[in-house]
Length: 155
Image (cartoon, rainbow, N blue to C red):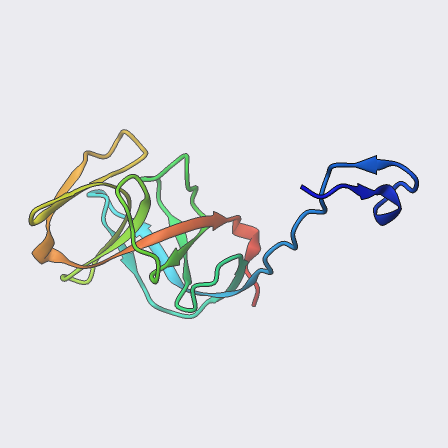
């Protein structure tokens, strides 16, 4: 740690052991490629249309956002919010993910575990049962980096 005079900072003449904070990462525009809608079975449908952009702090050049519709992950994600997906960062158990299935559906869930040729997904909303899916049914598992409010859309 470096000692500096407050003349280097906001108060002149005093000495402190507090270093200046590093510069914050800059947010960048992430495309909103559609929305996800919850069905009665917890499945979601991605409509793959460019709706606009949201600003988010990620270095993943392949990042994209989806508008949440439905309640399978409530209260963590509410209808109208946007989840930001970072496909270049590997999803780990315990993290929220979007799982694209070979039948064209996708789900927004928490990755519980991957064992052999199966994986288990959980909803935050207790009204939805855990899903155990064969890896043969999975096209890809992509990590959710976070979310931004429903009023964050830039047109």
